[in-house]
Image 1 (cartoon, rainbow, N blue to C red):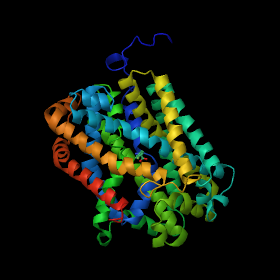
Image 2 (tube, protein in one colour; image 1 turned 180 degrees about the horizontal axis):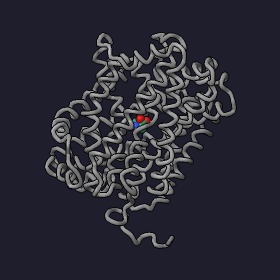
Image 3 (spheres, rainbow, N blue to C red; image 1 turned 90 degrees about the vertical axis):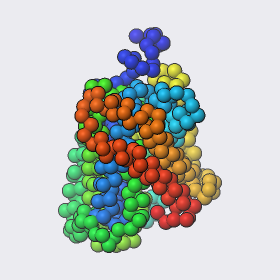
Amino acid sequence: MADKKNVQPLYQGPGRSTFSGRLGFVLSAAGSAVGLGNIWRFPYLAAKYGGGIFLLVYLILMLTFGYTMIMAETALGRMTKKSPVGAYQHFGKTGFLKFGGWINAIIPILIVPYYSVIGGWVLKYLFEYVIGNTQAVAADGYFGGFITQAAPVELFFVLFSLANIVTIYMGVQNGIERVSKAMMPLLVILAIFVAAYSVTRPGAMEGVKYFLVPNFEHFSWMTVVSAMGQMFYSLSIAMGILVTFGSYMKNELDVEKSTTQVEIFDTGIAILAGLMIIPAVFAFNGGDPNTLKAGPSLMFITLPQVFASMGLGRLGGIMFFLLVLFAALTSAIALTESAVSTFEDELGWDRKKASIMMGVVIIGLGTLSTFGYSIWSSFTIIGMQILDFFDFLTNSVMMPIAAFCNCVLIVKVITLVRLDAEIEQSSEFKRKPIFHICIRYVAPLFTAIILASSVASAFGLLTL
Ligand code: PFF
């Protein structure tokens, strides 16, 4: 079997990897979507930009803009049976088609290394809770002290990356699908437990109200802009993943139903994460506005303080960081698969070679991010540390451009008639009118707003 290397075509048709069925696609795509974005980013943005009103705006955007983007990418993948570069060039070799494909393909290659560094931080916290250091991780300066040490950060980052690469090497059904099928249900159970733990702490109900009940006085333009950016991040839009996963989807699967389930999964976990973190902050210090606005450090600094001050904190910490680890790992796997699929399709490499190459890229670029916070901390690019720069470059600049290209590809090149036919080949297309309005007008406009506002905020012209 091993020497049949070049016998089957890598690109299309029967030789291409596939998911076993809808559950495989849904859990793998949900695994890609549910990540650090849901558990670490969503709660702090919701806390900062108005609680219930942020949630309401987020839900409206999810049902319109978000739904459209994930449908479009999945259908594009299924239609062409290619990862992004091939999917674009299926329609010709113009400059736009080359650019659009490659920008979608390069994004995951740049994201996964720094994302895995943060995955390593999560693994470290889990390890500390397992060995019983519940108080130590809550001590002042612990987080800052940890991320500025090169060797331990590198160790946990490498461990996280190995788990990722081994899964990728095992293939679509044996690796990605199997890991997602095992981890995603567990993740839901853990999320329900941790949220239940949090909302039952004394004083937590005020937090539940703040998070769930919309108060229009808290509404601002920034609520919309930040919810838009978050939805984009959370659904793993414009990073080649959904095109790639769509290409592994069998033609008879219902695209709309599958993507709707991914949407429900992703939003459900984000809401549970909000219920874990925001009420815990209220129980801990009555919802002090400064704590609520703590931003990115909410998960690594505030939450450990909450766990340390409450009963069952060690168990809470283990469950919480295990849940975050699963979420981060399945997302890193999806990002890596998107890159590996491009190497296979465009360079004709086999999975082994492509997986090893991605391993080298992850360790190489990720090490730059690790060192950027420690031994090279004086080195900055446009005022940012290396990790933050990669995050800015991909999320704030490249992803909105890639998503904009996806809209243009579908409306101008493929045409909606052909895209509708692709979707209707296997099912009804119930939300077609919403899809058409969004892909033509709403999504291009919103991606432009995300690009403009995040670049303006990076240069200090706007406070996001
Ligand atoms: N959607 C995933 C998350 O919310 O964490 C994965 C992801 C999104 C990874 C955005 C990286 C990224 F820049």
